[in-house]
Image 1 (tube, rainbow, N blue to C red):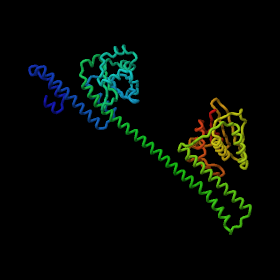
Image 2: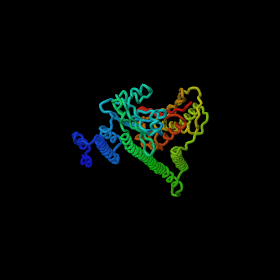
Image 3: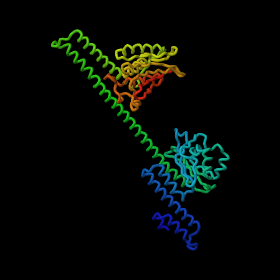
Image 4: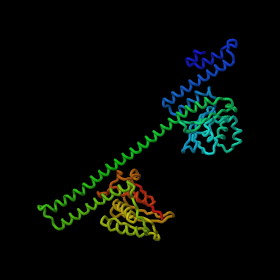
Length: 455
């Protein structure tokens, strides 16, 4: 038997002890001591195996499943459960549980407040709690939902150990038995040792989780940096492409005007100057859009809101764009408006949104088409719509419309240039007002852009 103990064969040692005849047995005290020695040696072997598994980096669920299997012949239980403290120690949440051959009602995710519960006393004393008659305990405390659930699972007695790591409470380890009085005469040392080992695994799991959270945060930050870098590249691409063309035309026009070899008539000089002015305006619009995007991305968009007559603002925008659209053969029509409605908005920013939506609609409408501008009042405020007779927007492009620097498959007709930033700016402006903006379009049947403003 001693040889078996030295070799770690605890089952063999126990079998050798049982095989001794009464004549060969030592006195009862020594036999009991040997039985205790065999039991402790087996426990030591299991705990050593558990520690190796913890140090090997196994996941907590795998460790708990191994514990459930490995310790059942040493420590009595039919159900094993683990709950952890959350919300700064204010909540107890079931993290893991196992019950073979029965249905579990107290499942992972079940949570209850710690304050005022019987579990709070276990943490305060650091001592296990033993309940040898769960149905009787439930009769005394019918409000204990967790007790009701494990009684429904068939459990009749329980032993609860606190999980502590470096003096810090982590949670609880629950041993439950289908038989009453299972834990009446047990020694709690083995239960506490098991809880101590699992507390180490839980603490390491917390550390791993924190590292994982930090890793995910770093990955999100890297993705943000990648996105900002992509936006920077898009910014440079737009600036290089959209500014280079107009600058080239301006440079060429000035070269013609300044070169004495060219005889430029008064009419041709006027055309060149008008073209130079148009190119300068286009470059200014591009720079304004890029600066607006930069301001919005930095969270520095500031609104100067005041009481506005929305119907008057819409009428002025429709009249202004009708003059601009007339040479293109497009009509801007303001539908009949309801009674004057007052909104609190930044007049400059609101006109910026309207100018973008109406000019886009004019740009995409064919000669002879029309742009319909309308507004309707509803319970929470106003809804403004701008509808065009253009080709509509492809389904794949619609989710990208309001994103800065988005690459769309559709291109403006008649080779008209656009910065592509106006809708992204409009979205931020409307959201800053507390409204929403969107589009409704069926490809081939025009598009309706809309936005809302609170009353």
